[in-house]
Image (cartoon, rainbow, N blue to C red; front, side, top):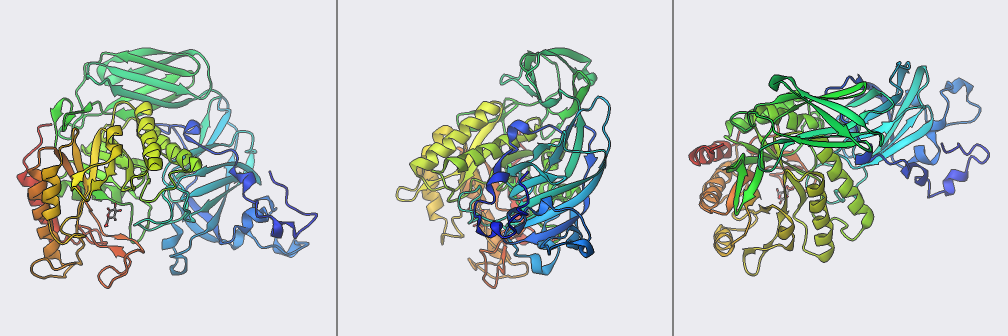
Length: 595
Ligand code: GCB
């Protein structure tokens, strides 16, 4: 804990190094704990929140103040928990009050929790679904951990800091955009702030299961089970798939174990999204995951699901909602899949950061394939080793969180990043990290075009399994001739997915020909694009940009008014534009995929 500078109440005015003590004890992928099937105590609900534009709370150590009522203060204060507004967690402050819409800074969230020790459960872990972007956690006035990265989960150990009875939990969350963070300060979506995913407390035994996985081997002949414990101990874990009558013993050395066993099972696919309950137990700890088993590979320019070629009929989606901001409710996620199904999709690209973990769980149930990515977007500070460490950690947290989701087939490591040596090294390393943590899935990124020769050309492609291509011929470029040249000139040695294409349309705005921002042109744009894309053998799929209009301050014309209007559906998530049916028609005519 950093002591409150009581002896000199003005010292903090001159300390610009005030944040350093709280940049210790960073939560990373290594401290993540799976929640799968575990009993948790929810800490969602009403928290007091105080906005803090200047980081006064860190400078003055607000977290260390006692809760004395103002009538008893000996000297004045700048912070009072109860004076903070009561806000729901999860939430984004931007949508709670009009005057908070554009707030970029920090906020202090405080709540109290009653706690009693539990026999045999010596460890207590705080689990956060996500906080955008930096978080610092304080329990009873003590800093117990911090995290960087706005869309991935993190866990902070509270063991030894909780006392029987009433405890004060405070979380500092800052959404300031920075040139060296991931994403950096220039993005085409809204920078929501807050503790916007679930918070929970876990009681765990001294040695507990950190994470588990079960996946088909590349040839589909067996299942590889693995477990990682919280401590480097030896022992044996039990793994059970009751439905198959399977029970195996998994030996663990130094807290790690892996075993490959042939298991006769029904493969998961979009047509048959079969899931099994897989129970993993070690000593007194156990977790249960619902897991689908499938293989995903490439062969030349094809993508093979369970050994058969599949064409990805997809759409991109942002986490954005007029009422909730970046918070995803289950109803919102289910609506997303309903719309995607009506569009004829079997694939979603979750742009441009890790979405709520329920998305992949529901995709598993509903039979959708997913591209999940981290926000290595545009002009990242590629030469900065701290930025790389941050990106690598976000990728690792995402992979560990979703490792058992059959729906996730692609890890995206970046989007439209200019070709430099630093970028190649940075993103090459991310692709290698993805492969090392998870050799069972494909890697991709939205790659580059050589605009002199009109070819798909990107040095990064050699590090990826699938080339993603964002192209907007017919929208940002006046016609489709560039696309015709590009597709004719390119001869990639691996599959290409059109990871974005789209056009803006204002609902109800109509017009003939290439009249920008009309529903008519957006619909015709898709017909023109799809005709070309579907006829190109090396293209294995399309993720249309995108399902819903979304908020972005970069877009300020009368058509846009702070929104990107490339949605097939309006911000109300109800009103469909003409392009919805146009694209649905294209997908219908492409025919069913064999899997
Ligand atoms: C892109 C970006 C995406 C933008 C989109 C657009 O290429 O990847 O984030 O929102 O274009 O609408 O221009």
